[in-house]
Length: 100
Image (tube, rainbow, N blue to C red; front, side):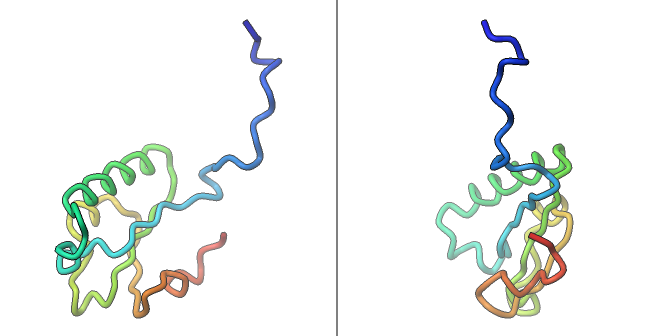
């Protein structure tokens, strides 16, 4: 059996919480009917957010024109760190202050 000192070094390509963010995109009530297996998608996103919270990984949710489509569903909203409004299909422009 190998001892820990003989294990290969940790890869620099692995994720770490200082360079990570969990992004939940547009899980809003009026959009859920268009998502196949929407309850499962919400459940999976909730589980991912719970894990991110345990690991101190920041999280962010986007909301596509919330004044028309409503806010992020409550199950997600209570777990996510912050929400950002989107006015275009892409998420790229909704978080200019986040560093890669």
